[in-house]
Length: 88
Image (tube, rainbow, N blue to C red; front, side, top):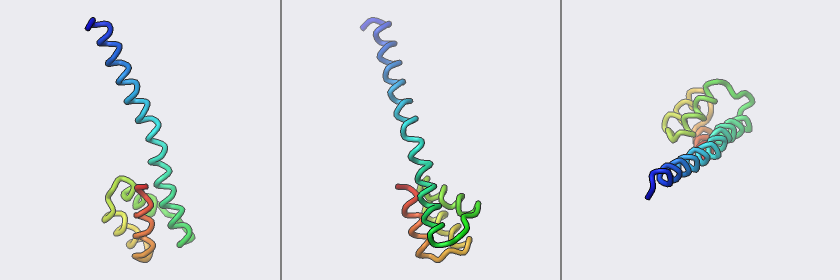
């Protein structure tokens, strides 16, 4: 294979990989919003502690998410539900 063809193939693969990451990123942000909306349905105010907990749930740290929401005054059932919707 000529080097120019090899370089073209590598650049095309890189462009596809970067493009896939760009399309996947906005969905992750929406998951945190879904968690916050779930909390808002069960409690009037969404504070910074709730946002941080939802972020923890979105990245997969369910234990920290539940514990943080529990510390923010949510019931264990609401905290579990919010953390469950965060990574989806």
